[in-house]
Length: 284
Image 1 (cartoon, helix red, strand yellow):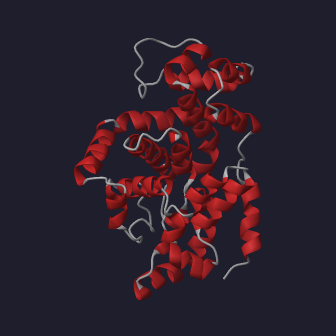
Image 2 (cartoon, one colour):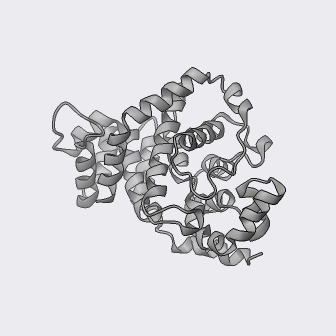
């Protein structure tokens, strides 16, 4: 078992969420805020403005005409979607790297994270959840703990996978047992360090339903289901991908039929090329 404090200290080496990005997320979450509030905050950041316009004009959104101003972009996409774009851009450096311990090549975790966030937001529509950006953001960064834990998993992989095969435990349970902390718990600590809401911390920490009673809320269940659907479509399936429990009762609790889940997956796969384009445009 490793020294936990030393592992947790590695959070400081992640690229943190900038103060401006935090303010943008706060404005988007405030129902009383105006488009002009967002414009006033972003307009003086030339790089951020240029990135928003570039992504807004990408094939992913397929808007009917070219967007040439920040005001137009926010009017077309809305405050929430613009804040999501800004947040995604801020996470590129953390999530684009490869993770040898989890057998994920460079860019795989990034593409999977965006896919999971998009699917989670689509599932949230089934429940008319107003703050779908919370679910989107949590789904995007739920595996941020892997970025830190990767080298420890790589060094302990034989012991972890041996525990999974011998004792029939999940990968995350073996992580906790062998390393002393798992990637979801560590992700929750990252969210705390970055001053995210208690709700966000909760969703990230329990997104594998490792403590099912502690995770019984609709937002965490939706993020969990998005993760499962991604795995079913072969995304993010690294060395740990198939060593997790599938809780059938979650879909039943959410009243999500098999047809609904299939429709969500089919809709996503039809637009997968655009999702890949979005992931690439955020990196460039």
